[in-house]
Length: 315
Length: 268
Image 1 (cartoon, rainbow over the protein chains, first blue to last red):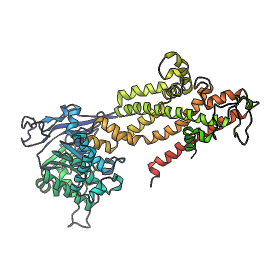
Image 2 (image 1 turned 180 degrees about the vertical axis):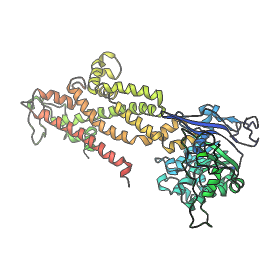
Image 3 (image 1 turned 30 degrees about the horizontal axis):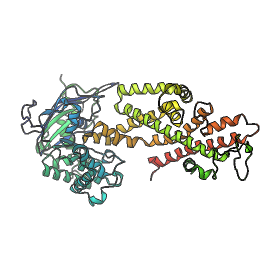
Image 4 (image 1 turned 180 degrees about the horizontal axis):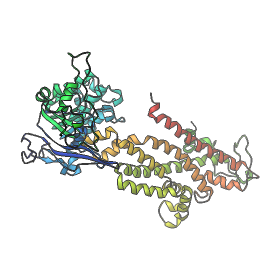
């Protein structure tokens, strides 16, 4: 994307001039018949090129919904974005028309999903689906698109790419499918890659390979990576910065080292304590007690207070 | 299978008619009963009946296939648009479909074919196979529409559609390339069965005198002409009826077989 010159610092939100993505006070709610579900309640963060930002949180904390809002792939309705701005290269994505938003997806921001099998269309070969990126966005011919697809499959380390280009998604293993998804996502050299729990459906050794691949690709291309996960180990290994989400809010933000060694928020603290420790082998795991809040009725004040070990009652 | 036999019969009738020409008639043979040389005997005009019945397959299949193509075009377009865009578009198109549902197929087609000749429209006014096919498609597309609509709604929420959208695919691309190929399997099954249903409907319309007109060769016409002679020459009604029933059944069975073949749960 070179058509639009970035307009640094003109955007509100207090981001640095180097940020390619600035999310400012983003709210997302789902208006259903049984009430309004407040999935995301005013989150702000920014992302610099080459930075890896991990968004950490349990299921239902709003991390995936906020990513989908950035991609513009929420089903609206029922989803509504009542507040907030999302600046990508200086433009507020939420004010762009549908066609301009579509042009950002792919070459600007790309996304990979948790379940690579269901994210690939079962009726087309993987080569066709990777090549479709070039055909849809760059108007390449079928042969050229196929050639580029093989190059990309090589790049994401799929063995024997030239032979496998005509295979269908169900003929690949889980890790290979996720590589296919990654190949599609990086096809147009996006500035930002959003990975929504990319390794959750994979087993541990494959997880490590996929994460290595992602970090290598990021180093080569300088793209910003938003890693949505609840895997603390992955965060610790690859992320630069981390934002911890709870009940649709970012409760804590900082560098990985800071957050992991000095968690300030009791929720983050609870998360860190819940990691199984090698030294404490045989001991009990330390869970965070209670249930995540109902997003249709978030507790007043700090939404974590009903579960908080440090809460105090005022007399 | 049986369907292939009927299709072959429609394509190469002279082979199945044992060389007899359905229009080469000799009144001396009028209403002759079946014999070794002429398996199905002769009709009132002294024409070889086997040839007539065999040649009738062509019009029936032509109308069945053309009619189903019309059903598919209408049903897929309306259903896909309704399912994909949802909301007001969906409500509007679904209500229009409901209105058509309220019109019986035969009655609607009957009226259209009845007033057809007075409209002066190119295909409809000549009461040929094209007109019958259009009449049947115009009043028979609703089930296909509902099938496509529900399939599109189901496929629309799948992850790969979200992924395609996240990769910047346009609405048209998502609908045509990603949703429809995954949504058509049950519609194809339905379409196959519908070929049989439309063939039967064509015979009904023709029997009632609003479908194909003599001297066209059609099972409906043969049954209509044979009924007055039922007492003296029952074979004139019997043979076209049997063939008609077998054809309809063949397509319904083929639909069932197709459904089994396309069902992903039965794939290993």
